[in-house]
Image 1: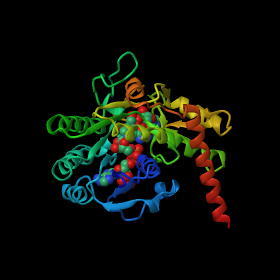
Image 2: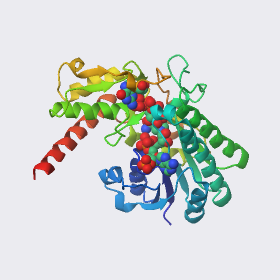
Image 3: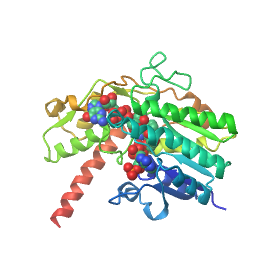
Image 4: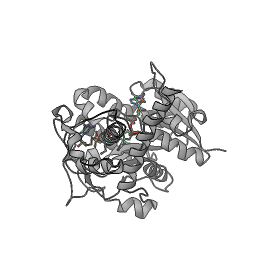
Length: 331
Ligand code: NAP
Ligand code: GDD
């Protein structure tokens, strides 16, 4: 019998990478999508797995839809990746962010409790929960939470609900506290992809400027393709637990910019950058750097792609995308 997995947030960045990994492991993969006006299968198509996924309709804000899905699929494993995941938007839409990221997780945990209590549950928790807190420049499983955005606060609620359902009902639930992870299919609003897309346009003469906010912020950036393996490993253990997933290396936004221009072989990056206050946040998370010892020791997980390789991979993919679009316009 094939193992079955349900992935919420299947059409985002992590969903397709995780689905690809599970399909390679011979899982039957169900992907939950919400109602859309226009289909948006770009990321699953990019990874060549669109036709291998069984799509089911549901929305994190609609408890009955989650109950129906869990009742009919009864998956062995549930990976909850769905979220309003853009931190800046959470300041403008705090209630919507809370409905999806906090209450949505409660609905999903309840659906599993009532209709499929042996399903193993993964919650996409985040380094944003640490916010201002760090222990000597690092964050790990023992660092306190001090979230700095409605997004971070909503994820703290979901984190503790995931722990609480494990402790109260003996359910197999695990939090992956993932630090920033990126890829060629990262959403275009997030700073890394905004930079690599902008650099690609500048390289090909399609733009002359890139507008950014706070260039001082530091992030621990890894590759999404590596991080989904840690998600899977967390659901294969004898005992559920919570794990930090990170590279242990931190870089400023400015360092990412410098590396991206260098990867495209464009000298003098400064002349293309304009600081625009519209891209700054009411409260910022200044410094994230994860200590990944627990996941390495207990799960045997380590990141494979380096910072320099990640930046290069993303810049090259964006340049290729624009070149192919130009070829298809000409033909
Ligand atoms: P993403 O690209 O923003 O994808 C999020 C997905 O959630 C999208 O497919 C979106 O659907 C779906 N979604 C949003 N609202 C929904 C709703 N009400 N009902 C059902 N689905 C809904 O995010 P990601 O980068 O893949 O991240 C995956 C998860 O990991 C998120 O929970 C995020 O908060 C968390 N996380 C991410 C990182 C990171 O660096 N990437 C780090 C730590 C934690 P549409 O396609 O229809 O918009
Ligand atoms: N998006 C964006 N756009 N960010 C900018 C810009 C800009 O023009 N200029 C500077 N930044 C800074 C932000 O202020 C932030 O400090 C940093 O770049 C990273 O921003 P994002 O790429 O939007 O990611 P994030 O760190 O806020 O959140 C991401 O990582 C979290 C894990 O730590 C998201 O993927 C979250 O969903 C995830 O939980």
